[in-house]
Image (cartoon, rainbow, N blue to C red; front, top):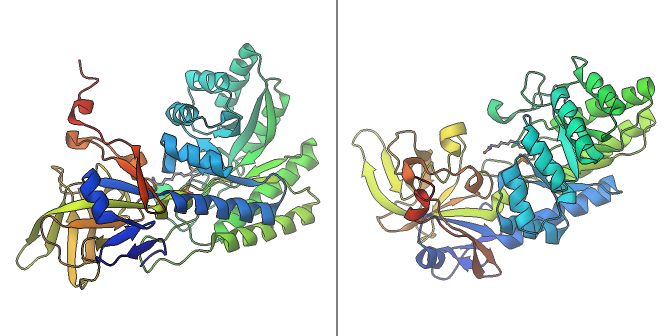
Length: 431
Ligand code: LLP
């Protein structure tokens, strides 16, 4: 099994966090998002502990909201002592509605509107991560009008090319995110921020990409960022007190993906940061990281009911399920790989290779191809593993398919985190 919080019970059913997934499929229907709350908490604790131990001071992780945003996740994050990053007012309102202290939130986004800026300031978002010069000017103006001095970080692009999918690599110079160090724009925005009276510059942010298995992209980024921090000190007398290294540690979707020791990765990055700080004579900044996927992905499982099982003579087999790209668009978008299992017969031999297809009127509506599983029968329950990140948060109503419920499991108990949409919800806003 991919992870130790997944198991098989006496009935031969898949369990998640001790709960029988087939029983949950019966209770709530399918498709169904499951999230192992205990696993999420464990992942939060791993980051908090490792960052405190290796970086020290106030260093710690922010939950990247984009990976999974609903009220329950902010309650868990708050209870665990996580901070959070937000990329939209929608995420901010959700966190606020859950009682998450917005003073512990960091507001991202490469195109914040004046309305976004004003709303986030009024709600007391702790820190803005400012993407560009135009935003900086707008923020200073609006903060001034509201009589606030807003804490900020500046998002810089370090010019790193991580070994991940181009669509989820974000730290290169030619990117819609941040101000590039290489072109001199990072220095320009830093100087401007220091000259303004309604913003207070705390430090810098970078994010190199997502689903990264190596530590090099992070240590390379830290090198460049610390070099820039030292340069700003030498040239302009400004010493950053915060360095946010972004998110991006990978997770294991299939057996061939490596097992990642986040604690060890953090230790390696920290050792590197410490050495560079010593070299430059810099005090150790407060280090922030923004994990999304590595906090929630492995805690999630999606359950589906098998429909048609079709073998096209001379070609391949298709297993159709009652969900698909509306609840998980990642294969359609990125060709992402997943592990699938027959939750209702876990001991059955996995000797069947099939394309897992959804029910949208679109041939690209697939969860995966060449997926190995036990040959399922109509009505059985299939589980797609590691779906906690970027599934619920990227779901759509394409073909007017209602979004499934999200159920939290903990120590064998279950409760609704998000109710499933009803058909009436689909046309609720239609005139
Ligand atoms: N911080 C920033 C500024 C980011 O842009 C991201 C992800 C994160 C943190 C969190 O990265 P993580 O730890 O989750 O890798 N939809 C894509 C992923 C897009 C990630 C965008 N930024 C997917 O489904 O793979």
